[in-house]
Length: 548
Image: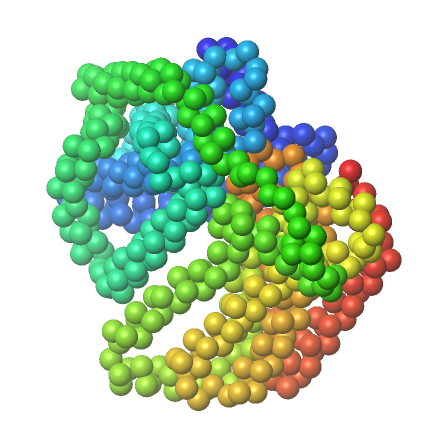
């Protein structure tokens, strides 16, 4: 067990890239993580307070906790279906672990432990605030919080194991899936479908306005759903009974059942999987290897412009790697649609007369500097889902040193690397303007044109700033493609920059009229862009000093 824990620690450190000696940077990361988690926990605490307060008069307060437990378990199953695929079969550490004298069961336990730890971050943000609010409102003693902590540690284990087992069985016996790319593209497709379905469902629910009493009745009506789901999610019932009866013998019995079921399933699945895991991984790796092709210089090579060839190379890397495509390209395309879906549903279901009044009300402000601010802030927010420039260097990993070895000026390579991000960010600009024109038919062409010009300047400036951030703090020692984005701390800086730009836009548009706002924003972002490009050109060797 000691070896398993040590291996788990190594894999976690590797996934989080814990090789930096900069204490200041680590403190900064910790502070920002605390802020982000504090914000998320605050939201769930507020929702829990409102829901449990309404359920207390009916003595059904445990229902909301049960819904949260079921939601966490269900989300854990879905989340693990996608993350376990890459961690168990396609991570780079596999080829390093297989030759070592480590038993298969220790490897599989360590990998399962990593998946479980990932779920604990979700538990911390979602379930812990709910349990704390529940304990405060019901004036529970310290024993409740201790037992709730144990339940929170146990509840995500079984969903992770069962989801991982399903993935392992599929990967072992299927003959349709023959390589990494095919498997991951299927995952991407399933993820898109799932996100769209969730958004459509939540949008339809969100359009129904309910009072506090109706909310309580709605939650109470879900008691049958919780009972039925506990037949499938068999750890749900003992977990709820443990929390509900924390101060009596029934609670201890439920905790014993939950602990026994969880530990038994953990060791049984680990023992079962370890017998075939190494063979399955080796088989998949061999299936993913493509036969070498003999090159014909006259057919396989053609003369082309430098920028065109470099741009094609960047797009090939993004498109041919499903993980990079899903994390860097897909969000910029799909999130504008997802965020606008509730608007289209609301417009469709709204009364035509009400929509006419609402449109006229918007029209009074939309063709002013306020409209410029609204459009730019929305577009800037959508820019945050484009991680191409932010990971342009990190995606190369150890191969990024190749940039310093080829006879192309580094400042030109920076431009070529951010071009895909610039091109992709055109989609949110066009989409927002089209949606605005559909909803507000009298929106002026000048407003659309000047908003697009300013948004394009922000687009180019943002991509330059993002690649500078990546060069300043590159994540080159990653073990899985997921880590390039999901465990990349630089995303926080992207958020900060967008917030600053949004604040500047709002301040200028609030102070000046529309003509002066447009002039001021164009001049400001143009000068900023010139300064950044000048800095890159004069300090190209310095900013690449971490690429070794």
